[in-house]
Image (cartoon, rainbow, N blue to C red; front, side, top):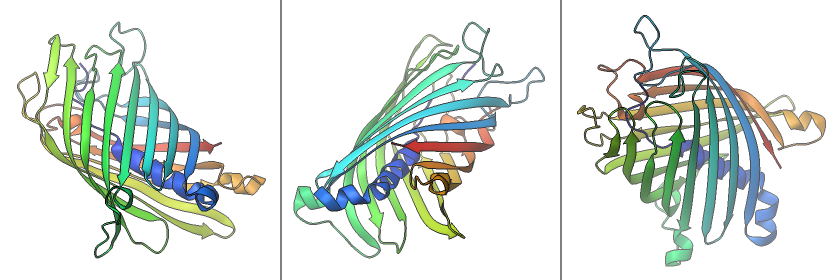
Length: 292
């Protein structure tokens, strides 16, 4: 069995967008726009999938290699973000034939409409320096027995906070998800729900080496019942990481970032952890990204 319903990796999307803006500061200064393309790799050996169990019935500990492409582009009117993750599971998370690890592709697209362009002012208040309107879609497919085909739409305001260094931003969203349940052989239609996606980045140095403490925290509300008749629960995804500008040591600052991250996922995909093994995930990850 595979996961019972899916939610977004939107915090990573928001973080990648803001990081790209900072890496492209020169382009922003030149023409008011920015653009960045990066390729990344992640590895962890303690992933979980709801309903995927070891022979003893406990949640299986799954290794995953994740390849990532991120493209972001923007101007004074707003920004576009495209993220594509290819996830390769170990054999503890099998494909539908059971002869190898499952393969998954997950796509995120986001467009932020700048309020300063839409309404002629940035809608700043208190600690918020600008408010955008965020809209987007998540798509996925996986060759597991569950055979998910997620489609999710999101829309809502995104708040950019005025911080002295780095960035802090959060979006309050309405999300609606549709999926496919290969176990019961039909589509899943979830209720609309409220969501919060936030991300941050704080730069600092260890001697001459630039470092960043960054990450995201996402919370998704219950979205009705899944096709097994179970009530979905509030889902929390927390992923901090520490990244080092390794490229700066070789004369290519801002190009190659490497570090370590930790991922905590509670009620993963909205699945009730009290009913289903594997709905709580805790895993360390090795992460790297190369910016062209």
